[in-house]
Length: 226
Image 1 (cartoon, rainbow, N blue to C red):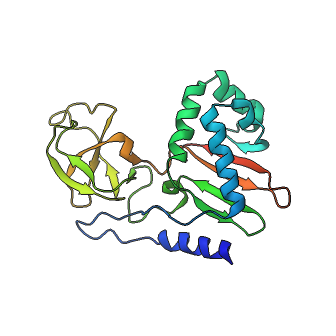
Image 2: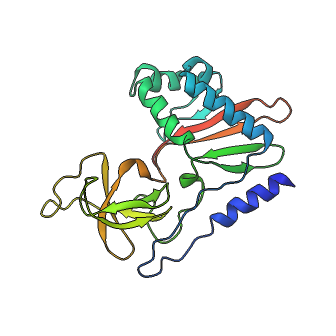
């Protein structure tokens, strides 16, 4: 019953909202406690990440763990990509830190529960914004400023809003530094928000499955893009 309730509440939070004129849709993070098996799996994953223990993480990578849309999967490819290949381990831990800093969503069934994180990927993006252009604000009362600086005038404060990525306009704004992101609101207003406060639904995400009976968890995927 508890599993069904958690899943039902998560689905309720994900109900699409119409993007009324001038109103930014909202994607609120789930606040429900995880079921025991998933809670334990998440704590173990968080501990591995905190210790920066690649071998311990690889012990939870199965042969079918998906790592890209180009066919990379399994422990050997994981070590090649994240151990010394395309990315270094600092990138790996930074991405996992960012994912685990946000809530996730319960999926699967009572007998085969799954943990999907972060919620900005796991819940459908509300409104009519293309997921490739959507940016979810992950905090409350986050400032949108008129220029990419903490000294910039605050145009608006938003909480968990879904905004649209806005391209740079060299004639007006110049090039946006990486620590800032240019966004457009539903009203058409553009401004700048500190990059750590927004996340794309198609950025890195993960899924953890817990095996029935043993309680052992497996990383189903750790992937970005679409």
